Length: 141
Image: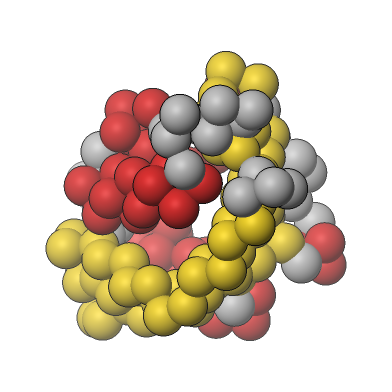
């Protein structure tokens, strides 16, 4: 049986690969993703909805890297909390963000069953709006 820590580390590795198929591979088929806080107005997403949401958000970033600063693991409850930051390059300059993830694992601890992602809402809202607008202009050329 895998440990919750190993699955959380696999998730970080998958996101650092920046390949959608790797990101999705660490999720259970029933995984639900929450982008928080609720004030962002983002509805919970199943895997299909998450892929549709994240796909247009991938191209603006180059050299995307997550760095884990703290990890809290509760094997009995099958939960992991990660405090992370990210860096990347974009056409509009350097990108930096901060996250708290609460991951709920499947019974065998091999997949993420519930993914709660707290983002720096002020920064994320502003920067993603600018990046998506830039990406749209760029693709219409």
